[in-house]
Image (cartoon, rainbow, N blue to C red; front, side, top):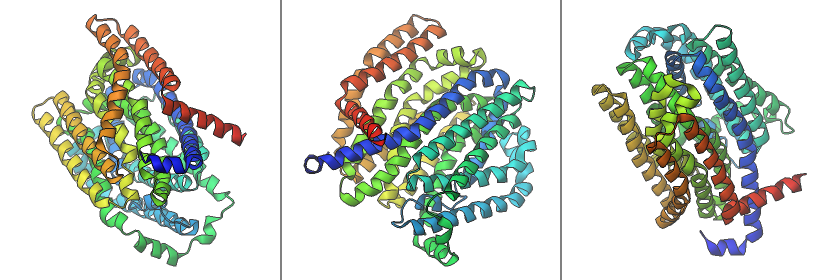
Length: 501
């Protein structure tokens, strides 16, 4: 950390810390509610829908996610960068035009490719829902553009509410369909799309009523200028982002091709339990972090922001991921039922990888801020190739467990490399990483020791699950009371709330 800079600007640093914490909490509040609702609903959903239904749902989401990545040609990310709002408004308009055009273009392509694609994926159960893909792509691209605009304008409460409404709509639709006898992959897909549609309509309607009327700033000539100005995004970052998305979807696609949608369903639930809370919270931090990094890079405090965010990411995620690594199978049996024990084992394999991914993912926005898109492309090529090889080797060996173990091991290496490189870009000594990691690990040893002892004594799933949850809560309380940085962050957050009231 740059101690001199901190000494020169203590009031400014305190204000930035308070503002950052407040913005993250605002976004995270909606995220926590959304994820809590989905997690609470999951035991019901896993008893209403079978693994094959979850597999079909996962395949649909994977196919949608791949095309959604390129729906705005990455101009949605560029919304954050212009200094003036009128310029950003034209980037937003450009993103929405591209989202509509590309989703419309997929209609004839998907119609022609449907039969061979379904045969390749070994997923005939997906056929009735193919016609929903273009609409899902449009909703995904539009949602991304609106999210970045609201992050730019710091409407974090609005984004938080959008996540809540999306989660409520998705969960209620999926549960309602299952309880009324329509438990199928299509019901899971329909619920997800309904949630996305509600979120998009909420954000769109709010933007229309803002004091700043973006429609007055939008002109075709200006849209063309912004198209040229940020051409690095479609020419360089687009391929990088597409490879990144493909690398995420490779397990679903290849597990379906090599095995069955039931295996995909096991993987999808295990990954969802890891990814849902981590992605929601990580997304909240990432959106605020991106905005702060743009500002910090301009005033020379980038290293301070990166180090502080890294610390809080480690504190938040280390114990939950270690708990899942130790007791994942038992936790899944208790929460989701005996039929889902395989999903719990997959989650155990992925636990340590999820920790490294969660810590590095928000910080990865640094290469946008520093305009290091070439590094992002290089990393995503490596990530895609290693994941492809990992799942392919497991498939050839006819072992989904080997495939997922290799996926996790290669992921730890790739994301570890990403983290070290980004710390170098921010001029933060590597020993800082080791110091923060080692200090945090020592603090979780007692909880992990107890869980390992329970595991060796073959304590029942219910006791292991309850003990895991209790220790995580106790750990967070302990950290808030004993960690000076976390405590000061909480104090600043309380002060920020009081000043707003």
